[in-house]
Every structure is written in structure tokens, then in C-alpha cells.
Length: 276
View 1: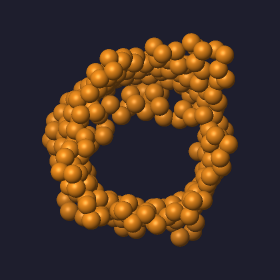
View 2 (view 1 turned 90 degrees about the vertical axis):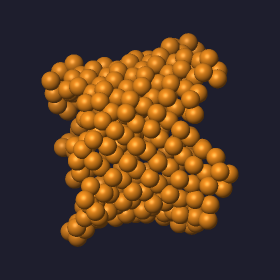
View 3 (view 1 turned 120 degrees about the vertical axis):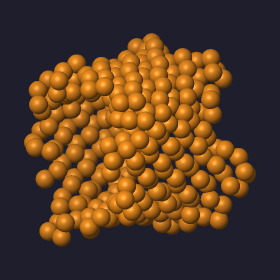
View 4 (view 1 turned 90 degrees about the horizontal axis):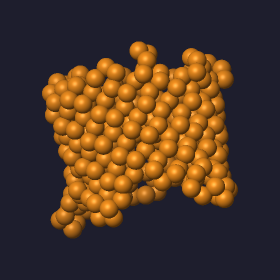
């Protein structure tokens, strides 16, 4: 693929990941293994709100295609097939879930040095169509996203965004929710290895006149341990500790407390990912 502006979903992604990724209030255990045939197997057990669920996922790579199959305890089977370079700079992704007959979707992504384009179509009798376009360079990019419901003949969503990236920082502004909200974020790496960062994000929803401001950061204690924290103007304080117990196997402990309602019980989460 080309070294262009990236997908529309990449706008603001680094800041969002720093503020949300790995934070959880559940108990999760995942174990990954690899067979001699080249199949990657991942078994996951999740306890959420006292309800236990699980799934088994398999991934197999063959030439320019990747096959992903996931079976969960609800007796549903999700399948995704990704084809790389079916045409120059083109990637196709087909997905469906059994027994949900209306879950099928086909997505095509096109990458160019100065633009990217994606379109996704639901594979049912009344298909919904989603499309994104991004133009620019790896340094500055402008993008837009739209969703259209062919049954009602109306747009289900439209979003626009801009991002500016430098070696040590990135900033983005996204106008979403059909123009009802705007989100601006800025992330700065405080070391050359980009292992420690700070981020700030402000979101305004025009219909409710509500503002949310969040600050956060991550700090690499050493090459095995990372700590993260975040706080918003509503008093929600979150923190996590992530430690690589053995190579490729990570333990994550996270928690959240409402500093404006200390009488409420704090929320804690534990995740263990074991890989060979």
C-alpha cells in the first residue's frame, strides 16, 4: 500500500487510543497459540457484569488473503476474509455472521499517494452504503465520511475531519454526529522513542450545550512496564498499569473512580493476554 494520508478512521486515532485503549472494568483472559499449519488460535474468556462469555478465534494467512473465524458461546460464527492487492493499491474485506442473515458486508479500500477511498456495502435486500475519502499527505490530511440508507433514502451519518501530524506530535479536529458535535485533540510524544506521551481532548455537543475536556498520558517506567492515566472535567479519573510478565504476555490492571462521587464504588478491570 502507498504512504499516503491514511484512512479516514486514522484521523484522531492515536489520541483516542491513548485515552481509551486497554481501559476496562471487566475480567478478561486470552490465550494465543500457533499450529504447525500456520493457524493462529486465540481463546478468550470474559466476565462482564457477572456474566461470563467466551470465544475462540482462528486466523490463517494464505498468499495475499487472511481468513479470520470467530465462534462464541452464543453459537454465532463471525467470518472475515481480507484480500490484499487484488488490484494495485486495492484491498477488499468481506465479512458475515451466522446465523444473522443480514450481517454480510463487503468493503473495498483504495490507497493512493495523495488520497484514500473506501466504500462498504451491506449484503442484504436493502443495503446501506458507507463511504469515506481522505486527501493530503502523511503530514496533513482532510477527510469526510457518509452513510446512506437505500431503504429510507436518507443519510444516516456524515462526518468531516482534519489532521496534522509531525514526528513528535499530532492534532486533529472532527465534526461528527451530522454536525452536532465537534472533537479536537492533541497528542505530544515526550521522548524520542515515543513510549511516553501526553494528550488533551475537548468535545462539544451543540444540541445539549455540553463540553467534555479530557487530559491523559502514558509513561514507560521501563521496557516492560507502562502506566497510563486520564481525567476529565466531570471528575472521572482512570488509571492502568500494563506489564509484560514474560515475552509477548501482558498483564493489565485498570481502574476508574468518580472523584465527584466518592461514595460510589470504584471500577476495576483485569486483563491477561498470553502469547507464545
